[in-house]
Image (cartoon, rainbow, N blue to C red):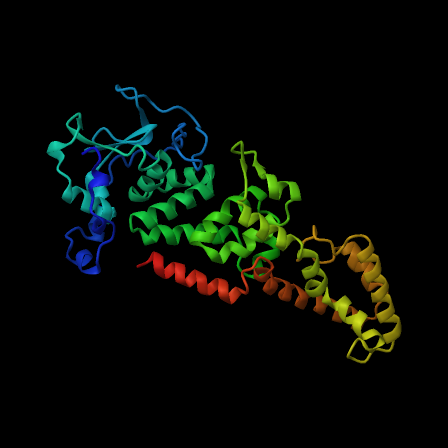
Length: 390
């Protein structure tokens, strides 16, 4: 069966709804048999070979070697398996009934393939995937097919974004829309899409995560692009141009030239957003002078003069610089300093003004990176979702 993937007609990659309705395997029977359920221990993730792509994690331990010298996969090599897949680094011996029951692609493949003319090992067909799929992608795929949540979590712990990349690849190539939906859920759990989780989540996202997520999001999940670009814009100029280091996987992640320009353009607007949106209350005071605030204040002149003084001192110490977080509020020390020269009424108005300013800053983030508005981003995401479920 070597080379079976190459001989498959294109129609086998997607099935019509009528075909799905007429197919005999039912969803209720797909998981009726699960071999090796006693294997509930943690399993190592596959290590990359020199021939595999850049999204393979570093090896965590050695797997047992097969008699032929190939590495048996540490999780998906079952003695009672009836089909063997080989990659450049691992052999997978698995069960056709689970492949057929959980993947339209495999169902079509085994209907078309002729096992009598294929290479065989231990009287099982062998399918060579070298150059077609990586060991990492096959590990993710089989973890989904076998519903092995423990091993899938092991892969996530090793590299969540590499799992996301594999899910999108498998979902788009082999018609698994549920994989794309799972990948989107993983991405949106990392990158916030609304202000309620924005300020708390962004500060905990590493630069390398944002750098790695940007190309994935551009093609598959545009709803997280504003947050990914925003985190990347907090990097130094050297990191944006030369790349940032992922110390956990010992690699350097770089942005392509187009994304570098986008991130740099957004970085140059961080100070502007912070000044004109987050803390626009100061701009309001500067423009209106003693006519601020609108409400009745018995110390209008003193309150407005004090805020202008505070603004000047903040501006002088780089508070509105491009390296500052657009959403970071005044810390306790700065707030105590700002509020001490205000009456109670003006103090509350400043506090409310900063809260409104944070809302405006969040709304302005997509435009910082040429994405126009949140509405445009959401419409683009809807188009991607519709395409991936066709």
